[in-house]
Amino acid sequence: MTTLLQTRNLSKNFGGLAAVQSVDFDLQQGEIRAIIGPNGAGKSTLVGLISGRIAPSAGTIAFQGQSITKLPAHARVARGIAYTFQITSIFANLTCRENILLPAQRAAVAASGLFGRVDEAALITRADEILARVGLGDQADTKAKEMAYGHQRLLEVGMGLALHAKLLILDEPTQGLSDSEIANFIDLIRTVSKETTILLIEHNMTVVMDLAQRITVMNFGQVLAEGTPEEIRANPAVQTAYLGG
Ligand code: ADP
Ligand code: MG
Image 1 (cartoon, rainbow, N blue to C red):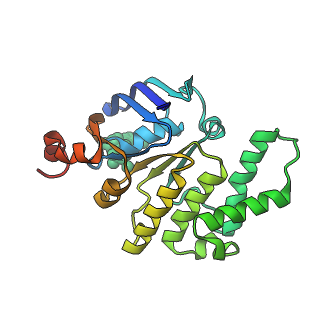
Image 2: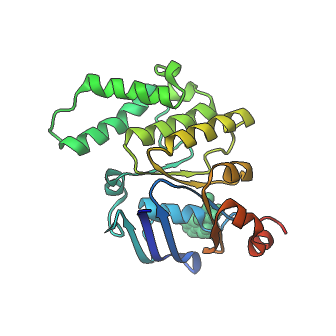
């Protein structure tokens, strides 16, 4: 197993509040990891620190063996860390295809240099392939704002793929989805996980137990437990803190 991401003593204080406290977190390449924990446990802050949206108060973050602690968010995107939070990353007035083309172009420019040649036809072909892969092939020309909510979430995953993400971070991606959309989403994440590592914050325990190979449980800004779904289900401390006994 290869370590993709490693945090050490990672901490974030908001005023007097320790939102994330001395977290040592290791993610292996290729795994699907879920982070669970009660509201306010520090889950979103932790992934904000990993993506670079939030600056740490203390600690280090390494990605593929290199420190990214001081890198700004866009530089982390260039390294392959894609973070989606609800639909903030989607341009409502652009079509599905255009929304995929933006990160696809960004990845192509990162690969070829700002004034390197980026083949437009190849980008469009790639965008359409990605749309087909996330199940939006028939909506390429639909404006994002006209899409069903569940489809917008699929579009976000497609945007992560277009970036050639090595790590796709999803913060509560199934919130607001219907049961059938959730089933569809689970299938998609399983497919996508063959080419990218997935870090998923998720409240829906069916999704967590179904998808995650390992689960990290957070409580009061710290890691309370970590293990396989079976281990987490059987962990008495987790049952007390989170699963309600
Ligand atoms: P979770 O995602 O597990 O629900 P968060 O990481 O969003 O938890 O929040 C952890 C704690 O940090 C909470 O007490 C929350 O109120 C606080 N917090 C989060 N973001 C901020 C912020 N920007 N400013 C002040 N407090 C914050
Ligand atoms: Mg959160």
